[in-house]
Length: 241
Image (tube, helix red, strand yellow):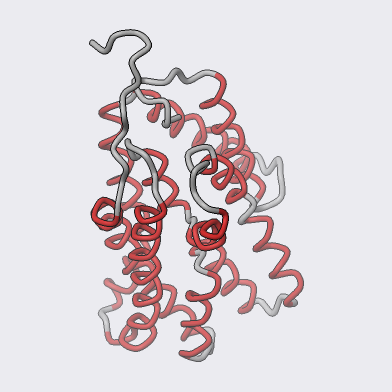
């Protein structure tokens, strides 16, 4: 038992920890990015444009949505607006991580902000220890390479895969989220509560169509973040929700 008033020095996470933490993300990203490359080819988007899509946007849900909108002939302005609304959740993620990044130089924030995704945020926010630029860039960098590489590979050889394999590529993202959440749920029932709470809100809003498409996800994230802040007690670490 730690005596009252004694501060425990946290381990500063580095490049090695970032790369190891990013392995589950890579396993999930690569097949899903292959599915994106395969679908973009079917929409008659060139290889260069497909790769630039992943290199510049780097947002899986937005990229898949954009493909559907492009296929439907939606105007470019509407696609940009829909993507913006879908990615509003990143504001909440950035705000949450900012609490743990007070000592990081502002010059690095642009790179870190670009690399924030649902998956990298989940890994970083659930990781014990002191976050560092090296940890975050390693985590986000390995995920970025996997996403861009998967898009390239999927575009080139995706059609050569059996139909059953092609249709199952997208499930990798859900398997990755399961791999991230289950170990944390075993350590903390708070994580289980927040996951169930946010999922329930999303299903309720989406099922009854209370809000336009895309807003249900945003509301679920905001509500779960508020619940974590207000009701969930810290379980031994001040840097976790």
